[in-house]
Length: 583
Image 1 (cartoon, rainbow, N blue to C red):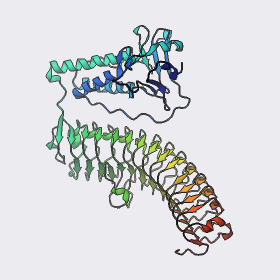
Image 2 (cartoon, rainbow, N blue to C red):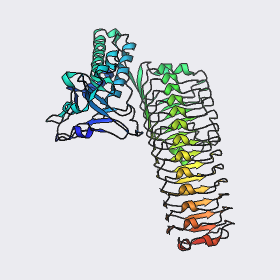
Image 3 (cartoon, helix red, strand yellow):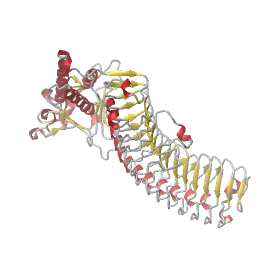
Image 4 (cartoon, rainbow, N blue to C red):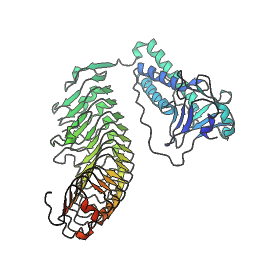
């Protein structure tokens, strides 16, 4: 039976639906009193919330839930049915989440199981596995037949808005193949055993959790080894030649830093494994001038960063991007660092991700790929990838779908394509491609349909086409400069407006601007100059508005008769043909 039909006719506000990415969502909707989704009478969300609180009180480290997967599922299908044994079966599409009032209950259950098992192990308390065979065994073959027609009797809404999902005769309720209520009961029992054990025997209680108030420097003896939270900055800068990875192991219980973390100028530091339990930083993370640092695997606990993220950064170039400070990750001159696998659990960056930016020289010659970012889905700020001499590809960003601000890729000597950005659909700010001398195409940007700022493409000498920009309809500034191999602008065929300045110059192989055939408005100046092979500009025939100067000049092969008559009347002044001069 269709999901939309199951609640029809009840007169209730609750909904059951399959969303675009395959999640099965069941919501009570707005009610005068707090309403719940009940599975055989059990408030699953309430029970999980209570367990999370209890586990936290026991000192458990519970990883924050990851953001939901954003990629759509083709031909998404869900299942809500009773089988012939009376079990209620609910399946999302392609193994995506089952969400009750917005909580992915299976994912939350797994996180709590992991935290409970870790607590039991550290306290040496015997507990039954929270993933026993009874709860994860598949439905018996004798019960495999599903009967959709009986499902409508399994869902009801009571007078206060609670949604009741009931199996027949209180049999199992299977969520994506898991006997959910059995697993929940086992987890509750395991937590109860932990609570009883820690109450009855103080000696088996979890290690006391310490909160340090204030900044922490190189003298780590200033904080107890049981410190879980630092309410301040952790500044491990220039701690001396004796400061190694082993020296950081005193931080092995650290989970949160409510401030910045800086690790720089430590010549003997080879790893950061002492931070393996760190999952939250409220501000910036700086890693630089650690010449023997070979990996950052100790940061694998980080799931999200509220601010910007910078990798391989040197603050010697005062560009506007270097001025952004709110929540950043800096990393520079880590000469032995070849990968960023330590960030492979990072799902969300609210600020910007910049890889080797703000630098006069290349300080990360060994970085070959960004595969450690393969779980990253969203960047709330900008993405900048600059000055990486051996960066071969950006395939590690293949799951990235949205960039809230700028996208800037420049001076990556051997980067030949940007196919790893194929899932990105929009940038909230400018799109900037400069001096990537091996970049031959931008096909990897083919799914971008919106650029919130300027489009600046400059000095990519091997770039032969811009077909990957076919999705764009409007931009701010539009700059195309210094491309010896670019013969046409056909990839801009859908562009209808430029909000400000349009500049096309020093494109030695460009013969026409037919790719601008749908352009109707330029908000600022129009400048087309120093294009030695340009012979006609008939592609500007649709242009009806230019907000400032029109300069089409210093193009030695240009046939002036190809300049549309309408263009001659546009702008505040015109310089057409001959040598460029000020208006």
